[in-house]
Image (cartoon, rainbow over all chains, first blue to last red; front, side, top):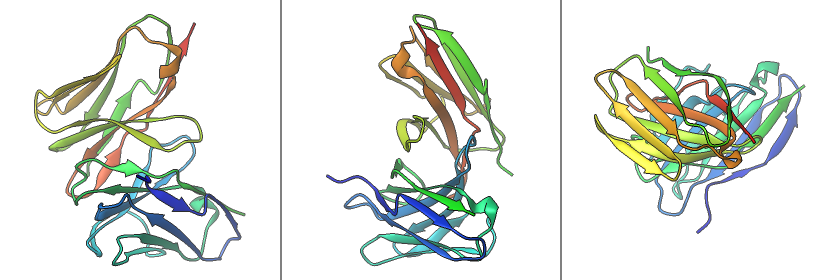
Length: 113
Length: 109
C-alpha cells in the first residue's frame, strides 16, 4: 500500500507569489492534516479536514487555505508568500478526525526568496 | 492555550546507556503521541498513548503517560547509534495537535 504522498517535493517561489501543495492520503483514510515545520522546530498545526469539511485550524493567517476533495486528497494554498513561509510542509492522514494515529508524508520543502 | 514542553532539547549519550526524555503539557488531553524524525525526513509514528497509566514498549523505547501530572516520558534503554534522531511528543487538544520543540538525540560509540 502506498503511504501518504505529497507533491512537489521541493519548490522555490518569490515573495508575493502564490503556491499550491498537494497531498494524497493513504487509501481508506478520510482525514488529512497539514503542518508547517520551520528548520529546527517542531511541526505547527495548520488545518485538519475530514470528509471534505474543515475540522480544525491552527493559528495561521488567512493567507493559508486548504480544501479536501471527494477522493480525500487535499491541497494547501498559501497566498502572498513571505520569506517566513519557507519551511517543510507536512501532510498527515488518518482514518478519522481526532488524530487516532497519523501517518506523515515526506513533505514539501518550500523556499521563498 | 495548550503548550507542550520537552526536555532536554539536546541529548548526547553513549551507547549502552539509559536515559529519559520528558514531555509536559499544559491542559487536559486524552491523547499523546511520540514521533521520530531523521534529518531531512518526515515523521515516523512511534507510540500513541490514549489513557492515564498507559505504557507502550517497542524495542529499546518505552513510553508512558500520566494524565494527572500532564507528563509523558520516553525511556531509552541501552542506547544504540541507530536511535540517533529527533524525537517529538505531541498532544491532541480538540482537533488541534501541538508538538513539542523536539529532543535531538545523538548516540555516540
